[in-house]
Length: 280
Image 1 (spheres, rainbow, N blue to C red):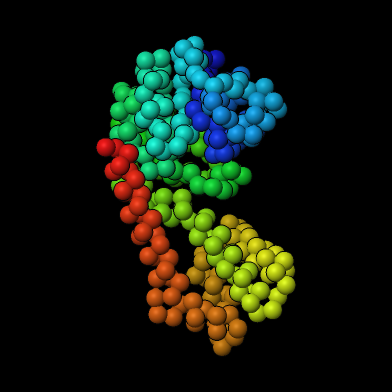
Image 2: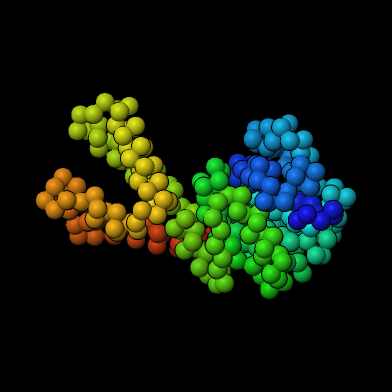
């Protein structure tokens, strides 16, 4: 990424695209600077416009021939349904050696390869916390992407947080169901916890603050490596105490574990359906 000819073109400067660009520009380890990055979006987000003003990044409505020819990496952050029609017109101008990274949820590598054939390609699945650099991205590469391209993709996606790699693309639907959709499950739990506190007489604002602080604090303990989830749960739970009484409800029968299992299974099925439709 330090080569004089290196250039990253980001197609789609919406919320996630702008978050990635911000991470690249603010982390020297990414190897991306304002001079080696072009943002392409006919309707860029406010965040992308702010980046253009703060760093002097080029922000354009469309990618011209010169921009495409000098790009060694093209990152597609467009809506899944629009991926083929947005990428296909770029095939003639984009270098055959350019690495293509797609973060379009549910869009298989074969769709990217069909739109931009004979190029190294990586499919990445980041999640919402990536917008603050606290996400996790799971990546898979096609056969044309060698070690150098994998390292480049890894370096770029680390702007969003942790990066993991898989070798079987069929697992990407399960990844999406766990880490892609997972933040929404946690946000729902936070809403439900606050509502339950309010039902027990807490003022609404206090219930909300307690729920949010409790969840963020518990997550911080996991991140700090204090223990795995099971160990931490047992550490908080005194036999016969208040926590045990609550867990007996959450874990009784199928309980919360069963609900989460069903939710992940439903999300995984839907991911397969979206992938099949996008590849048709």
